[in-house]
Image 1: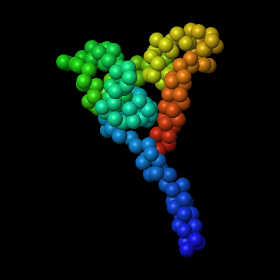
Image 2: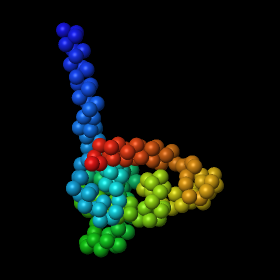
Image 3: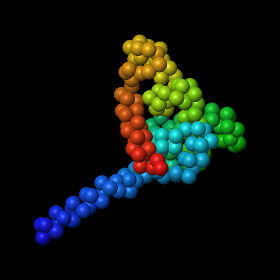
Length: 181
């Protein structure tokens, strides 16, 4: 009986290693993939980065709300929602609309595009700014205690942002490995 259990375990292990992607898709689902791909393409952002951010921001819960009142899948702050509604000409906008997956992902991708342009496609800065705000990241870049060259961050003073950056970058690599064809 022990030999059969060992053989079964080895077979399962070999299959899992050979087909690790199917197992990882269970751990790292890509909910809302159709919507993500539409707006990622429109705003020229990587859909796997969007998925990694959503996983860390809301765990794909469209009704998520943070202690700072950020809402929805990509945790859009009220001020960002208002700004986006104005720039994207969203009619009759109100904050509860941020719980709509389509609009939330659209605004999140639009904002990521802005951060890509502002920080010259520097992924570290983009992700840090998504969490801590672009104003904070800009201040950190200007402070030699946090940036020696004014272009990259050597130190991130917010512990939450340091951890967030690590998690999002890790998940981004995993999403690329699992879903990229």
